[in-house]
Image (cartoon, rainbow, N blue to C red; front, side):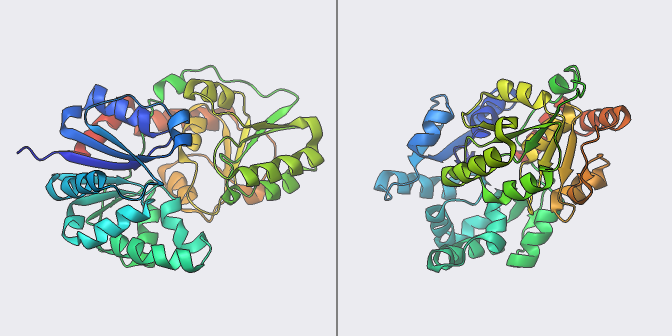
Length: 349
């Protein structure tokens, strides 16, 4: 029996393009995908039917077939890649099949790690954390988005995992870098946050922006906590009136990139690693990006040499043409199409 590679994922906007990438540039017959989903995500993120994909509703009570399928794949796959440690039922299975953890590679997303610090510490948290902690501690490999997240995993969970080079869902930035730069006009277009989650600290950002008059503010709020999204929208409209625009409908990626190309300044006030997909595209487009300087991704980007800006020194001055071009060129140097393909291939040898 040929031992293949198993991916365990939760359906999100990054997942269908990633599977398409595997099909086009790798040998997809070597890969199997177990994807947890719900009706909402299935309607938003279209995924092609393939023989090596099984979709599992996250809200299901384990059906015997699906349970045995997961157990079988964990036991007999050559390598296992867990894309975000989100599913408690999976963590329970991994804990009871602990001997398989040494071949598991955890691609940390952000929220799955930072739940340790930011999740509400109620009885449900501690019930789930028991298994999450076990998996973090005993997993064989961690693939962070930024190096600092691996250090936090070691600090918080005393993990013995080996660190692999950072993992990102593939975007070919050559196309974005070649897009003509939109020059700032009299009205400055500012993006606040990347989702309807309170870690974006939208209202704090709005308070900071309230003194500026020649601005329009845009907030992507199409996914996350919709109750929180309504709070954000009501607050922003009270402060800014018709200068605030909420993006409440899911956009196809090309449409979203066109939106980002009309942004002058992006603010990500998250106090944890989040929104890296947005950030890299914005850097490729030559935009000015503000981050919290205490975060692991700010440190990561600065150490790589990118010109990103500290939110504590916020202003609405445009990014210089020199810094804009520097970020574009550096991004292509570090994350060219060929390099990304080779980086992905090395995970699966």
